[in-house]
Length: 570
Image 1 (tube, one colour):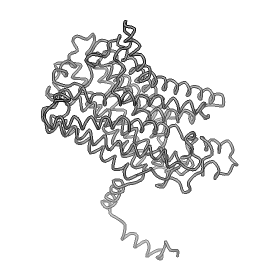
Image 2 (cartoon, one colour):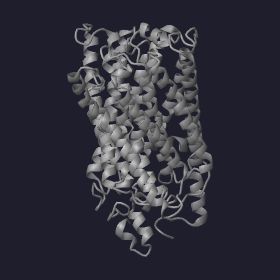
Image 3 (cartoon, rainbow, N blue to C red):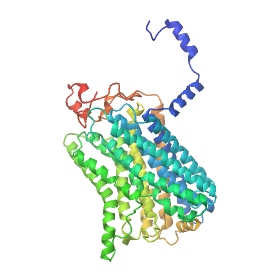
Image 4 (tube, rainbow, N blue to C red):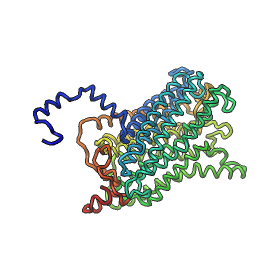
């Protein structure tokens, strides 16, 4: 006998049978472990899981609103509730979906890629998750009881603002943990020049969030105090709140939250084409340029004051901020695509690529994000009249660009979850099941967004309504050529995207919780250090802290199989 096995075989079996927990006890213990977890992989999955569920519900809201737009006489929802329903839709897209899904992937994966055993301030990261979830619940309850921007119940308006503030605090706390992890908990040899692209995009994205969200939080405080005192002297009546808060739910702010999706694509290209990324430094710069959108959001500069105007003075005055705030993110995502093509070319010369479902999801997601960033730049051209620079009245073109970025980011992050599933769940999803869902997802993304882009050029009013009058204007499609048709197509797109998310969640649930064999440590041929540990990764990630000697330690090992495994990554 050993110090572990202290009983004879028969007695041990009897004791184990008598001490075996019941099914209810097992569920309770498992739930408690998840609720109180400090494992960053679980915290990230909580974020991403709830984010996907909220997105699923948001697509249903999008379908309802689309049907209302398609037929002005439709009465699926009482007219008094439409104002709040529009806000539920935008809140779900941004604070309920794109931010938690991208942040969840960063929390789950970044410490592994850095060779760290945990995330910095793990309890703070978990607390931030619960603050976000609690704030989202408060905001939705307030909207359900006639609160929100332009709401008729003063107490529920205050509750809505409180919920937004609580969400911002929680997301800032979790984002700060990710940034601190990247800056302080890297494995020996893991310099900033060697960090993987997902880690780099997580750093730029979380720093952007820490720039944007405090602005939103401070604005919410001002609005809360002004509304609570009942003066409206500084920010106007409750109907004017949409003018102050609307920027949080649209481009360019959502571009900042899309950076994890850009990082996933940049990470999967070298793996899929079995090559080193060409010009790694340029890729770092390109991802950072996409993050310049944070300055546009934080300053609430939409780069549409004046651009193409006959007055030479105003032309150049508008051109400079446009090129910086809208042009640099577009340049960044363009360079990401070009560098990826260079890596694809280098890999094609060496042999056949290894294209799997994660890469397909990431590719479609990146293309949608790039189209959304381009749309953000296009709507800044005042000659197109997509935005009224005097009143900041927007068309549905703005909603279409926002949907491209949001849905594209979700697709790319789903690709990331499938790619790192062996480390998170110890399972792998078959390509035959997952690739059709990627095709369905990009079809839903394009159907939901492109018709709104077209309707925007036809002067269909969009944006976040501030009053019942604004809602009526958004639903008035008679003056728009084919306005009802474009709304129907967009509605179908929301439904297709909802089916995609539902199918992905079902596929993940059946694969990751069902019976199956554990996969090998590196099933994809990954190049970074996390693929040196077991699948699934243990709670502490690595039995021994790895020492990193290059940006692609696993690729070095494949090139020199006889090399000491303790050298580049152990």
